[in-house]
Length: 271
Image (tube, rainbow, N blue to C red):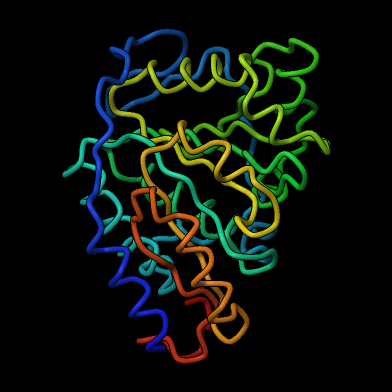
């Protein structure tokens, strides 16, 4: 994959700007910076482990070899986040179907399992939200209900039974996603969730970057981007164009999903 190596090398040599001046964090509501989190207003759901396994959500499994890949990815991501004092990043892909939401879900779980971090996973794919499906969560409200109907966040957020992890799901769909992302109410929402907790990492599960302009419209909300590509499916031209569109954004790296030749555990073809 020489084309990918050259493209990544080009991006890596570009100047990286660290965003500073984030609002001072406050500890309020139902999340605290300690080894034990008590959820008093956020709804808590019970995970269906069999359903999660069928949907390739495995990061909470201590002895699953695939979970080790996400722990490795977690370590690499957190190293960059801490070095640059970032607290948020987006996950996107060139096109649909490469597994970006699966990666976002597993990576969020893996980061939350590190006791020094709390994680908020946000479904920012307003047209085709997928996170509630990956968690097999039967939830009534989503981020669109907050934006359009003033449903309060504490009726939308849920804890999927994993300590230090909270999910802001999507329910329903809209054709006005980029307009909603740029709206004053969305800006207020993001400012609120970014300023609450000093130990929190926020992960935005974005739509594919080549499909619509939402990733670029939301660029002020996140500090960096992780790009997911699919082995044998994502075309060289799609990857190159995606990297070009992200050239003014801090790139955490790429995840090669569904690899036909993983480095270990040859029976598993995740990445």
